[in-house]
Image (tube, rainbow, N blue to C red):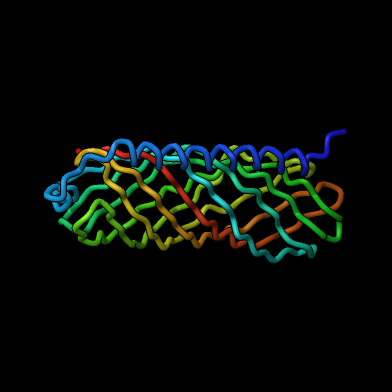
Length: 230
């Protein structure tokens, strides 16, 4: 029988390797494509501009949990595509919306029932972020921001138990990142968000009874990608 934990670890290592390769390719593209003149730097972010980015997102939960049967929750990392759109309401302030969904395997470890496979769930965390973009005299354009999100759990599979429910809820995020412009219309983006996300769970384990859990997911989201300025 295949060791599923080992299988998932190997699969994540492959995804991590692909993520590193993708990042390396973007750096090569940025070096080979560099053609922005110094006089263009101030104009690449202005009021009314729209920036659209296509990225690879690595979402890694930093879970902490309290359960009625002891033990703790374990949630795996996922690597997915992401789309983000930013609109500049002034030369420095922008509003960002991101679109992306992740799938996570869930386990309860060290409980009174032993280690329990709780299947998987899909997570959709639509997030609106308010960003401040610093003015610089070169192609490196850093920013910071804060955001509000509403996390939705859907298409859940309960694994070895009868059912698992996840409570949808509001959360927030701190944001830091930068754009590196390779022309006046194109850029490389690296973005980091630290989310504060909580969910409450009810687990129906059949004849073993009902268990409850309160889980702080608090994932770290790191995305790298290529973007277009309109």
